[in-house]
Length: 350
Image (cartoon, rainbow, N blue to C red; front, top):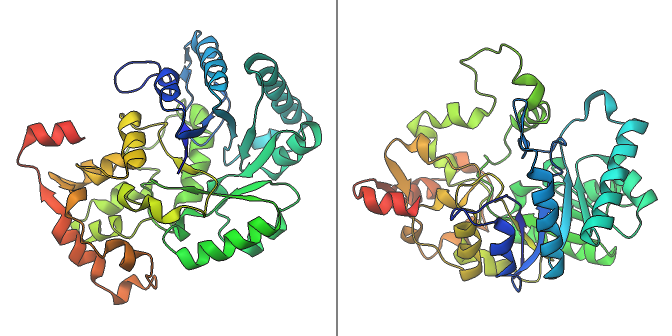
């Protein structure tokens, strides 16, 4: 299994992230990255409320060249949920084309563009046919019908993460993508809630974050509904019902995906996440592998990854999805939920 990992300037050891990834090049298929202050599904790398990291672009460009020299593919993220009034504009077309041209010239080639925008996908295919387009996981395309609508625009699809544990469904979709010469991809460690009804709202807020931050906003409203939801202990069982895949189970997906994506852009310990999935095991707090990490909502507890029952994957991957009629995840939560008593161990694992 090879992995697609998110770019950061530095890893948890304060070493340049690209240097660390190059040392693991045999297991790193690609690195996905934003372009400086361009809208994506995360906050800007270089713009903090107008305070610009002017060295950021040169630093990243040097990293991209290094990654390419180590045969690690480059995947540009243009995956904001909204591009506002520029969404179908000549401005956006020219801007996207100029970014790709620059990366092509400076880094020695761009391999993929992952986007939420059919418009951007069309512009890329029209102007850069050598660059493969991928439909972002945030488009929530979960079945063959949805893929067929856009098969002329996308060379690959990230499966809607809510179907991560349905192996029968994934195999069916894989057969279709193979028959069409498309690639299928999966995000393994999302910490988001399954079928989150607040995702579209939250993604739209993030797309406009640099503007929203400059407005006087209501202070007692959290744009990510998960934090308010997990404030009630009876809702913690949803943590077990989400879409993450444990490192111990990632080998079950061999042959289904060209590469598996790991969310590492916002986590404090990106190398620990990558190494856990490469090793296929992890000792510590499972939520430390996910993005977002909801440990703070557990009020002094954590989820011990080594306490999962041996039948976890078999049961989770054959689940009917009718959680209201089943108590299996509740029973597992009781088993894995561990009170923080050894502070040193917990801090080390988190």
